[in-house]
Image (cartoon, rainbow, N blue to C red; front, top):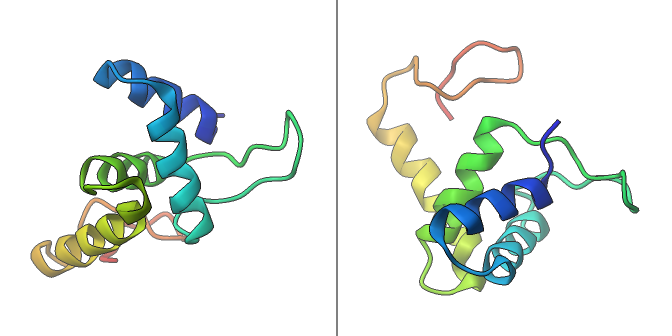
Length: 100
């Protein structure tokens, strides 16, 4: 299962930038409750979904500063919900596709 450190490394490598800014954005998103937290320790990272990966990508690329990543992710979620029909491509808890 993919974890936050895995995603931050892939995103940083894909963008050709250092790992630290992406990891800091992930931390800000996690502290804001937008990414899951896992147990402490080497094997305690929370499993990530495609929605979490999208949140990290949008939060990181959509914010002028790392500390603004949670706001960028929240705005994009509201924007997505306003534009997409009731059956949008964001899976709900039951596995059905629902609007955020």
